[in-house]
Every structure is written in structure tokens, then in C-alpha cells.
Length: 438
Image (cartoon, rainbow, N blue to C red; front, side, top):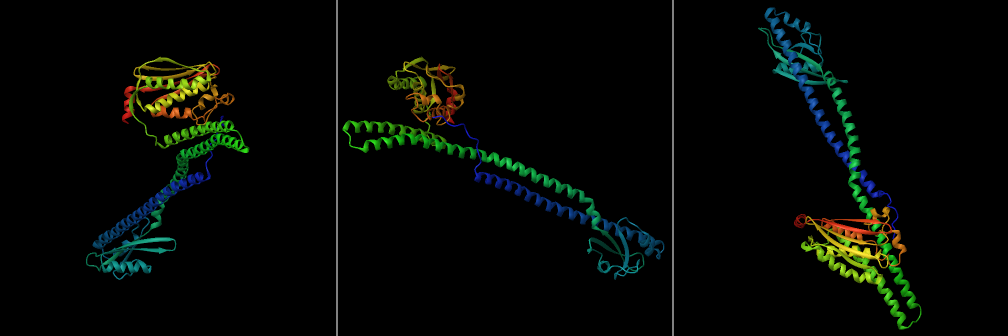
């Protein structure tokens, strides 16, 4: 069977929605973190506003008290006058008696009078007052100067002037937060896309795998059904029924072989195929496989020859290694011409074993070599040769899995019309031991 060119992986609608949801979660979580950070930052800045303003108002009121005391020591009548002429940028300064009545102006706003009265009854007091769009904050201090009656010094400031100092900081933070959310959304989408890519590939691979498996099974099942229908269409003699049953047997064997291969690959993908680890000799396994392969090759007129064989110990599963050898030999026999020759050999160089199987068959075109290990793949020429199309194109996939489980690499070298050589290179014996222990 020749597979159609691989189609580009198209995201399933559910996976596309999953990516969008993951992106929304990433962006939403980051936005929530930034929001909490912004709230905390705003609370900290606001508290700093208040603390700085309170400290400034305390300093201003104490400066007024200090100047008033100095002037009262010189001339008591000038203590009130100093409040009229003392200026501190951004601050309103007032003197009142302990009842809250102004000593420097005709009248005070009621909230300042109440604050002054509170300070007159104690030592100091602070208050905040909202006047339209302005937020005013005041601090009052009770003091006594010489033998004069106690008085209260008031300092008033506007919180807006401090907030203006931090406006640029708040704007910069907001802009940085917006850019950060956009970057996180873009990065989250890329991360979600990368995270779901293996799932998309697995879904696409499974879909194609199931479709190809159904196609491979459909053909022998259709043949079995048609032959059974023909056999039952009218009465026949015993020989005809025997022939029909034998043809059904052949198709049943083919179906069983495909199912066995599918089961092997499914267990391999799920990691449920137990792998035995034992010290075995690859040359012994290959000799046994070559002897069995001669029985397959004889009816086709193909000769199986043993090439150079050297003692090659490896660590692995002897049954799987024999299956690997049989797959390579069976493939070589299938695609060899009558009177062709299949050669098998095992060499050991620096304790690293190499298994080779070569044939003098039809070869593989260069454009098909990258696909020979794909599941269900069979080249065009396999369809045109009688008997060469046996199997479902799963053998080399299984061979590649077996080689990988043993830390080996497998490759095919071929020239169209001149034959093909399969080379399986195993790691050094010491490396094989480490693979076993792992």
C-alpha cells in the first residue's frame, strides 16, 4: 500500500478551544496577580501620602509654635502677629484659642474650629476633610507661651499636591501592567500551542493509524466474505469446498498476522510489552533466524546465505532480537527476484555488534527511503510484484521499535534495481549492560 502524502496537522476544534482557555487562564492569572500587586502598591503609596503629609503638617505647626514662642518671649503682642506673616509654601497656618476661635482671621471653617477645640482639650489632633474635589488634611498642636493663655497652632495641606508627585509612577505602572498582560497572553498562547502540539499529533496519528488499520483489515475480510459467498452459492464437490476453506485459511492467517502486529505496536506504544534483559549472542540468534528463513525463501527460488559471522554478545530480549532478524530476512526475501541471494552477517568491532541483511532485489527509490519505517507504508513497486505485497507494512516499524529498545540504530541502504542492505548497529557490550540496569 502506498500512503498518501502526510496531511498537515489540523487542530481539532476542542483542542483549539483548549488553547484559548489555557491562554485565558494564563492571562487572567497574571492579570489577577498584577491587580493584587497594584492594589497593594496603591495602598502603600496612599499610606505614604498620608504619612508624608502628616509629618509635613506636624513640622509646619511646630514651626509656627516655635516662632510664636520666640516672638512671645520678646514681645507678647507679636505672638499672634507672627502667624499672619509666617509663610510655609503649600501650607495654611492659623492660631486659635483652646475653644477653636481664630486669633488670626475673622472666622475658621467649622471643621478646623472643631479640630482646634479637640487639640485644645488635649495635646494634638489631626483630621481629613473633603471639600469638593479637594482632600484637605490638618494637624493641630496645643502650646503655651510664657504667661499667656494656651493657644492652638493649626497647619492645613492639600493631599492632591502629593498625589501629583506620584501620578507619573501610577501611569507608568499601569502601562507596564497592560504591556505585561499582552505579552503574557501572547506567550501563553504560544506555550498552550506548544503544549497541545503533541496531543494534536497523537490524535492525528491515531486517526490515521485506525484508518489504515481498518483499510488493511478490510481487504482480507472482503476476500474471505466473497469466497465464502461463492462457495455457498451452489452445491459443490468436496474438493471445491477444501479449496475454498484453504483460501479462507490463508486470508485468516493474513488477518491474524496484521492483528498480531497491531497488538505488538499498541503494547509497545503503551509501554506494556515486557522486555527481557539477558546476555545473548547475536550471531547464534542470526544463524537460527537464517535457517528458518530458508524455508520461506525456497518456494520463491531465493537463496539465503550466511556471510561473515563473529561472536557478538549483546544484552537484550532473545525473542525480540530473533523477531528483528526474521523481519529483515523476510523483507529481503519478499523483494528479491527469483534466483536472488539474501546474505546475513554479524560482526563485532570493539565489542559493538553489527547485524547486516542484504539482498539482490528490486531496491528502494531514494524518495521512499525516509518513509520505510512508517507504519503501513509500502512502496509502489511492492504492489506490482506478485506475492511481494504480503503483510501490512508494519514489519519495519516493529523492527525499528525492537532496535530502539536495545539501544541500537537501524538504517536501510538501497539502490533501485541493485538491492537493499539493512544495517543494525548495537552499542558496546558495556553500554548494553548499562541499558539493562536502567
